[in-house]
Image (cartoon, rainbow, N blue to C red; front, side, top):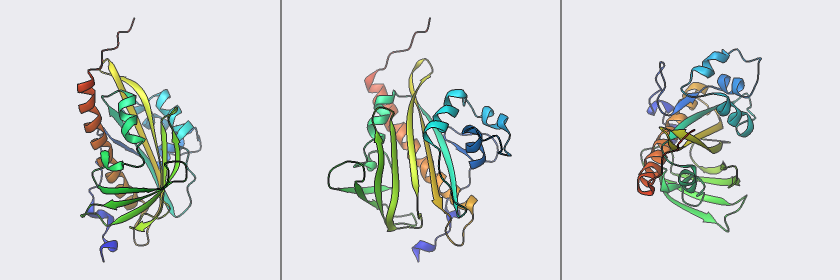
Amino acid sequence: MMMMISFHFFPKPPKNGYADSVPISLSQLAVAAGDRKSNFPRKSMMNIKGFGAAGREYIRKHHTLEIKDNQCSSFLIKRIKAPVHLVWSHVRRFDQPQKYKPFVSRCIVQGNLEIGSLREVDVKSGLPATTSTERLELLDDNEHILSVRIVGGDHRLRNYSSIVSVHPEVIDGRPGTVVIESFVVDVPEGNTKDETCYFVEALIRCNLKSLADVSERLAVQDKTEPIHRT
């Protein structure tokens, strides 16, 4: 019965303005990737706070997704006032997502931590899910990219795949980080693409906020020095 809970359990993002975590439509993703056939105005991508050429290049390079007719896709951007090495140290922990993901209660990795490794994730109560089986698709410590695919579990996110990339950025004169997370997933029967995207974006937004909170607390302890530009 729990599996039939509507995606409307999560609030829809605001229609006007952008929060720190910015949900972006598939049409905008096409523009960022250089698809001039998209009907979404190119200037709308430019109007996203601080989203310039570098951000579009990150998306073009790392977040190109293959999307089928019965799927939806989106991505979010989060700016974190902490250096890349601190943020990446949490994102890369495929074996311990509970370090910053508030909806994960336990994680067990089968075998060695390598490409193709599987993890069994227990989900906290309150969500329309109890467990998730996930496979490590990519872990690049040089480019700071993590890709994970859901391959089983007690939930409605079928054929879910995500990519997280972590990039350096100066924020308020200090070393900061831009995190981009994209996903593609099947649209469950009885739900629309918009409902599915709203649901997944809400989960990712919570994860990114928690990642920022954890990383920024560490950054204060680390006492990062201001960047002096000449």
